[in-house]
Structures are given as structure tokens and as C-alpha cells.
Length: 444
Image (tube, rainbow, N blue to C red; front, side):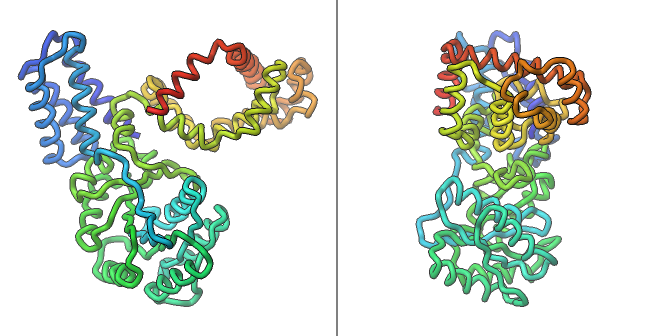
């Protein structure tokens, strides 16, 4: 995400590299390039101009510290302004009531039903809630079935009334059902349209009046750029929603919607969808997003994702095996499974400082480990447990069984040997300083 904007901003700040001090001329030249970068990212001209004018004013009003170059100072000011543009701080959901009622709104095709389920999964797994999903879209073919399938997938109950065409009545009965069965969060999926229309707005307004939701979340596709912002404004004028879920942010290399929704509707982005999996829903942190836009990475989110998949029992087993120098392909496969659960591989790598630019042209998808897993699963239990057995004939058999080239098998075994060496370094304490530094950065 934001690859194009990040590249353009980096080129803009290069204007100040080598400059001894900030002047009105070099700041104006830099801000001209920043404004162009924002416009290319589908940010409206007014917001782009106001943003760069604010940076220019602050830059010219500050004394440049001797230890800080003009380009570094400009990046710092831009970073602070990006945070404010995107909302300042992460916003929590209002979940004080029991049950807390969340109403989902948005156009058809924005990912509303899917993200209702993602939100339910988020509240269940990360917040310890017992959510109830409500199938309130009675018009779109298969919408109810879709929600039921997703609910079963994540282990969350779904309330639906087959044959009913009255979403207001469904919503009221669902809330009563939640109270009776101990659900502390109710997430109501609603019907969307291909465009904003009065009929849709009136219906969702009646649902709002009937159940008095504690949160109204507007779901919008980030890929639609300024159209997303305009749609958000139309919905907010009618519903006065509480926050935004921005979907498909992982596929949006420009990022205009994420940058400007807050300033247009004065409502925060609360969550972002960053993939197809049910776990691919993240709390929106303006400061972390600003870091990523400016090429600083996002190590805090990386550490958080790793901690969510951290299995203490598995870690204890692995530690014992490392102590005996017994790291094998079973452990390697287990580590791959944990990494896959963390989310999109390329997105994860982009969170590591300095990696975003290095991998921006690389084609890394969620199937990046598919070949590796096929090779390991083609090994016998004895070969997985004792990699020293993997001689030439065994490698050829594994290559044939996995449908991969012998060169790929050899390459994986060599990579495994290198990883084993790193594991031994961590075991011997040589990697402890790095791990402590990453953990401390993650807590900041």
C-alpha cells in the first residue's frame, strides 16, 4: 500500500539533501513536489494545498537544529502533519453497553458483509467478546447464506429470518435474541445499493431509530479513491456515523481515501481491511500509517501480529529442541504456519524498516510458501526429524513427489541449514540484543 506516494515523497525530500539550511525557495520547491505526490494519490486539491501550506509555514517558522539536516526536519514535520490529517490517534469502539449494538452501512460491493464477519472475529479473538451477527440484507441474493458461511467459519452465531423482507423487524428481534442468549455485541449487516439512494438511506435510518446502535460503521472500498470520500460524506450527512472501515487497503497503492476521509467527514477511520482472510482486519493507527508512508516501516504492528500468533506451548517445545540442537523440518513447517497466520507476506515485510522499498517490485503473494510446504510434506517422518538423511537420491524422490525442481529442493535445504545456524546464535545469546531491541521498539 502507498508505494507510489512513498516514492514520490522520497523524491520530494531529496531536494533538501545537501542543503545547509531551510529557505523559502527550497521549501516551496519541496512542497510543490509533495503537493503533486498527494494529487497523484487522489487527494483533493484543497486538502493537498492546505496540507503543504501548513508544512511550509511550520518549516519556515522553526530554527533548524545543528544536528538535524533540513531534509530530516522536513520529514519530521510532514510525519506530524500526516498523523493529524489521518485523525491523530487510534479510535476505540464504544462497547460499554451490554449488548453493544454495531450497525454496518455501505454500498453494495464495498465488502460490508465480509467485514461484519471480520469485525465479529476481531471482537471474539482479540477482545474476548461473544458477538452475534445479524443478516439484515434481505435483498441481495445469497447475502444471508454468505453471512451464515462466514459465521460458521469463525465460530460466531448468525441471526437470520428466512423469508422475511423486514430488516427493521429482524434487527429488533436480533437484539432481543442477543439479550436472551448472552451475546454482548450485536453486529447488524444491512443492505447496500450500487449508488447512494433515498430508499436505502431511509431503510437504514429506520433500523437506526429502532435499535439505537452504539456504533455506526461506514464500510468503504479504498480502491475507489475520492469516490470513497464522496460516498462517505453522503452517508455521514444522512446517518452521522461514528467511524469508517476502509477495505482493500492492501491493494491501494495510492492511499487518497485513507489520507482524506477524516478531514472531509470529521469521523475517524477505525479499522482497515488488509486481505481476504478473516484475521485480516487491523485497528487503524494514524502514526503507524504515517511511518509506512514515509518509508519508516511499522515494526510495532509487526511485533503485535507476531505476538497474536505466539503459542507459548509450542515456543517452549522449540526452546527445548534448540537447547539440544534438534531444530528440524517439523519445526520449520510449524514456523511457516505461524507466519502465514500473521497475514499477507509482502505486507508484513513492508512493516520492517528499510524493506518496503527493497520489495516494492517483487511479486510476493499469500502462496509464497506453497512450494516450500509441498517439499517438506513430501519428506518421510524420519527425513523431517533428521535432515542429515537427505542425500541425493532422497532429494530426487522428494522433488518428484512435490512436483518441484531438484534445484528448488536443494535451495530449501540450504536455506534450512542457514536458518538452523541463526537459531543456534539466538540459543547461544548472540541474537538477544536484536530481540530486545525489536521488543522495546514494539512497546513504544
